[in-house]
Length: 378
Image 1 (cartoon, rainbow, N blue to C red):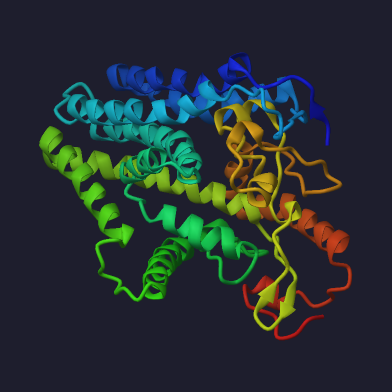
Image 2 (cartoon, helix red, strand yellow):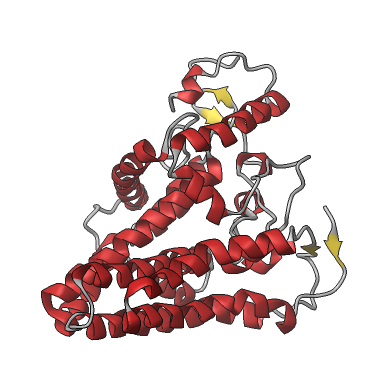
């Protein structure tokens, strides 16, 4: 891996702040309607993909052990987004709910765009915040998730996904040949159940019942109900519908990314219910520069699972010798995921090549393909 000689500073942080430039685009659509509603998805999905093509790959890695990194502007980024998203969301409800210049379809279009922001940016930033040790950052992450009615994602991600990734116990690991349209309803149901069971098990180890006040699900439910109540106070029934619309779009965006991140990648089963340790090869890596600005290096996912405690500016990029590589950034890959024949044509050969490279001795992949635990070590 190529190491960057210079320390991280405020100049390096500036490109990651481009996400804030997307906020006015939603308002242009809200005021003008019509084709202006396409601004937000066009900029978020296609503009950054075009920039990826122009700017290429960023394969430089900051030295995570340097003491002279200045991460203040990086850490401020994720925290600052919380009030921006909250104000933007509820102000849009206040403006759109009674608006007479927009049709019902155009109102949906505005909140489709808002859902792209609260999913692509908001949930991505909440993911960074939930991994931090400080209570303030974790609370800010909870607020972002409450705004999309997906608060249990924190428990699922920290207590289930990171522990069981690449195994049948992880609902979020997409199975080989499993299309997104089958993956999506499965993961919605299973991740909610698995996250609740994980919190219940943690309480049981402390000899506490699931309904103990320390169960974070009570906080999750309280924050989500509060968000819905604010939407109702501001916009009435229409406000609630608009709020739920953007939440649904945000969740869809999240699970599309989850689908892409680990599709077909599994850890070796060692017997007795145990799997090998998580390695960079168990996540798809992408070094596309512009989309990593938008997603605060989420596409350096191989290193995130290998070293979950690293803040996003310190995440390392891996070459194809150490981790499987996506051919494009997440924006392009999530569009492909919505078209299963296209997705399989792009990704299935890559999964098969990955299996041959890392696990040439495994000749029967049927259990792995079906999301089952193999009965024996092969």
